[in-house]
Image (tube, rainbow, N blue to C red; front, side):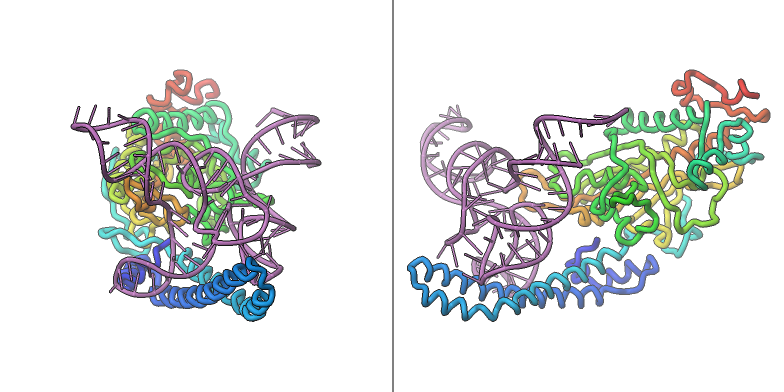
Length: 425
RNA sequence: GGAGGGGUGGCUGAGUGGUUGAAAGCGGCGGUCUUGAAAACCGUUGAGCGUUUGCGCGUUCCGGGGGUUCGAAUCCCUCCCCCUCCGCCA
């Protein structure tokens, strides 16, 4: 959500920012809505003033038992009521219209973000490891092992679900545990266990609503299934004033995520790359207005460290203006090398959102002794998507005989096992 | 699921139709006193929005929304949340 005052201060800069994202200019439209809103407010307030004055006099008349005068005054303001109600309704509508329009606008890219239309214009900022050629895709490896079962999942739930068995199920769990342990032990994140069902306000706060409702699952009694723990972790500070001394707040969670993948029909239909339900370790930071960009770099490094310790080749991409998410001002994607696909695939996305979500959540902070509050700045990032990491491990660690070597850092989480598939080979 | 009790300012807690944005206490801030601090005493202390060069003025807000009324923290409807008892249950 943007501050209408910022738009008023420099409408051209606002439109220029939107243009970078391929969104057409609309500052003028917003200012017109705001003007209408303010006129409506002034009209309603004027009527309210008159009503209040009259009511006060009526009260005074009644106190001195002057019923005649009281009645005279009551007759006098009787006509006001209708106008007042209309004016208040007009004020509400004018305000709603402006809020609705503002809520649909994406955040502005930070200075220096590469300008472009789509992922073609993303910029590689670094890389790690050496990509190798591979022969097998992860689902071939998993099915050969007899531990990855899409048919069983389809029977239960349809497409875009998977059943993992035996050591692969354990590997999945090991990955999640390894990741979250790393972040809480070494990077100062607080582990958090969260609901995966939330209400409208929370999803609105992080920007998935109102625009992207079709990407989410909704229960019959009105809950949303969280598409990422970004929603819950970020909303932890909603509608409150955090003491600035407590910042930065760093939260990590290992949760299930649920996405309808409404717009992805036909894409990544095979395998575990794109599922309706997947596990992810999410990293969220709540910071003050000055720390956002440094925290973005830090968080990206936290995510990268997971890949490094798993010895998975990856590259870091800075997203261009056209490829960034709705709330983001600056985003890095980490893309892991998948030998089976002979391609880099996104495994983490780390974004700095400025105060865009803070304003939507009415989440503020205040420096000790100061009166003025500011909206918190927020960051979120995957550290990492567990399902896709499992895919990467399989394709990068598969052996000639179809077994899969367990990455060293995961062995403590696997009962010491060095290999998957030996017993079944 | 059934029955009941509650949601008031940073906190505790009064307030059931008329200058109530809201008593009192705590906390915070300023001052007096003190070498300094504490204690004591005095004063002060909510937020959003609109308007204004500024002082200010106006308006809204007592969980959210709607309604009754000339006037609502106070009455009505509805939703949300918390608590207690019973039932059920991982």
